[in-house]
Length: 64
Image (tube, rainbow, N blue to C red; front, top):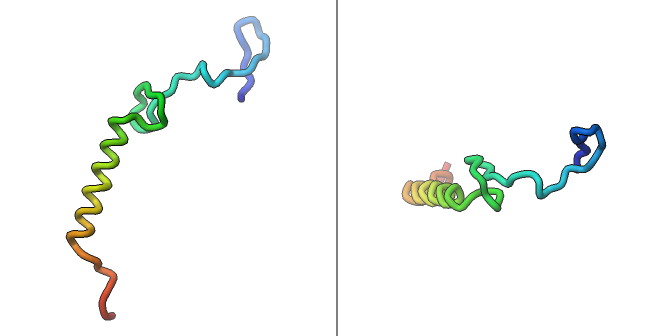
């Protein structure tokens, strides 16, 4: 934990609970690292990417 000085100049430790928790992607208040909306968006993007890859087939196989 980081040391801080209060307005009287006294040293203290910054508590974990005093910092507001925010989403790492959108910076909205959240109890988790990534909020549920951003998590759903990322999952959708991954599924779409995997669908495109599977549809195209494997390009690295076959004779060379």
